[in-house]
Length: 638
Image 1 (tube, rainbow, N blue to C red):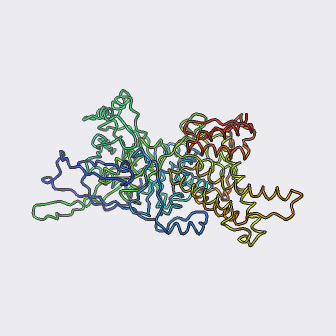
Image 2 (cartoon, rainbow, N blue to C red):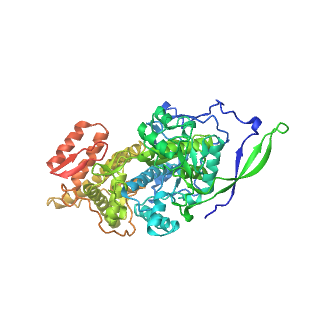
Image 3 (cartoon, rainbow, N blue to C red):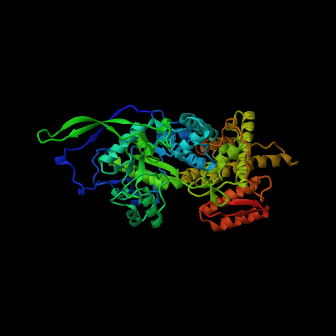
């Protein structure tokens, strides 16, 4: 058995003669992310009337050493970082609208993201979420914010225990193996690391404390067999923050008597409600109540995955003689067991970032029950708003189905992307998409991403070569007369507008390729003049313009993160077995992809006439574009 070290925690209570009455009706309202530009950017959070702990300070810990971007910033961007951060608008799942980010302590931004359950290799669908976190963080850094990012690692749950038993290895051995694989994949994808990746097994005391806070506030109870549950019926507003559950159906699941787990599952089935993914066989008061702490079951649990936390509680006993009361230290055991699925995130967010955080991100499938339960736990324990802005990314689909391990249609990063070129292409495929829309993972899509990267790499090499041969590039032309410089400045401005508008990366990609196209045209112009026999003088390149292109590519890459050398990636058997009969070799010509990118940007701008004309040009080149509702277009050979 594993025991955690005791920790002192403070709970404020009163003697029985002075305790809060259960009918207390005081309500604490908190307004989140106030903004003069939109009334929808604030939310009123109702805290349970029984809330007695006194955590009312909204704070955000700044990262002690702010993370630097992988690419070096230009002088212009360095000056920008010293100024007031630029405004970023994000679609907030809490308010269901696009609103400006208003940090608690600008320019500091606290950001918590849901990490992997380390019982297997993460698949490419999982890595869309981690790449979304990366683009969000890179954009915040680009706009001048300091980001304090925490990402958890779930290293104990039913799936982990089952796999440990199946493979006859320890919990530590299994989770270390897949944690290391996860970090290798993050590095391969050029993802900026979080400040910390706390593991659930290393935060048992913090979770025990949170359970006792919830109990003190009348929101948690222990069943007869020893498990702890969150009482959903006592948390006002549960199921209406990130989702819109029917309160009447929630009430149907509640019961004032414990009829046993089987009876309540039957009630849930009869009401048509989906059970929590963390459902546990135990007695509980309401069918929707979710598990905070799972009591030890010798027929299932392992000795290396069980804890018996001892918590020293400082209780303040009020009396009539002394207004301050008397502090008494009590020892509490929550019982031998292990944490439920949702508890760790609330405990870690509170420990590392404070009771209220600026941003929380995760996949759209986590909205309910996981994120809704996080809100209930955190606000119920802290008596403060949990998170000001929630960001959720869409699924990665194989065909028309969401990629998932439960469906058996998943591909790990190393299997789907066996080469460094594939890995880098997958990064570009994800970061150039609209994060909230579904993303189709096909060989055609990956091939198109490879084509785009080849074009980007080629223009970079071409510029590098001419600059090496022209050391005094500044004298070749004047910035006031350079058409390339004018194009670059225009597209950089458009790029910044795009990324600040809910991470509109398709538009940002269009800006990137407009700059690339300007450089390509310059090289073609000079090459054409050199071929003309009647040319009297050797044509010269617009070197100042090309230098500005190079600077702009580096500047934009602070967000895209695509110019990097991929670490060695070991492939797996059966790699990249995705079929697409419509594409010859998976390669789409560069001029076609350029038109597709322009058409996507035109559609985003609702310029339908331009979008139609670009589609016609694509058809003339022998390719068809199929629009996918909510996803990226599919390009195929006619």
